[in-house]
Image (tube, rainbow, N blue to C red; front, top):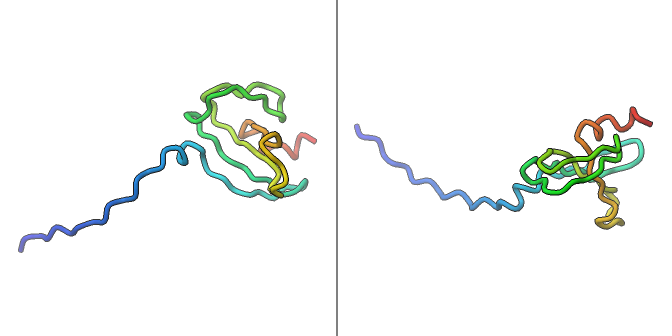
Length: 93
């Protein structure tokens, strides 16, 4: 008995700009809630200074961007962190 070809619905088109931005979540820390976005290396095009270690985050380096989750800030409240520095920030105080 021959197999039937089952028609599949087409997948929605991939939004490349959104995919390059990384994943965004709200995290609870001892100093409050923070919106944290993971930035993949391919989406990192500028040099930033990590507030955790005071070293440069070079273009092409995966990292995180964090800002207060209360929504009262603007882009100047965003800080770019090395992923490891962000995870270890409570131990550095």
